Length: 171
Image (cartoon, helix red, strand yellow):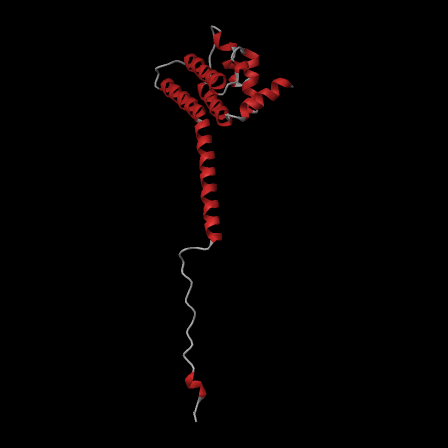
């Protein structure tokens, strides 16, 4: 006879721990979804960065004009005229707002007011960007105009600005 029948049983072994590789199919799907999402977001960010290149270029050009003015290489009216030209090139050529190409004085200043969401161009110091700059006694507050231009350029958006001006011209 046996003393203890439990001695005939084999020892209990814990089951093997699951390996981390290869992952379950759900993890593969999650990894593919994450990679696709990151690719899509990266592509959107790259397109947005590329679309804002003309605005960044205009900001750099106006900053260079301001530096030239501060160093005495150009006078105030030359700063105003060349800044106005940079704005025209940005809006007409780079952003494709063709109807602004033929505008001047009040229409131009009103368009700039619409973009900046203010009245500083038609009623404030930005009025010098209209036909006032051609007056023999024209003078400009370069610091105030520069701040106004920087504020304007910060509000320019490659897709929203043309739509904003199209809406305002329809009203």
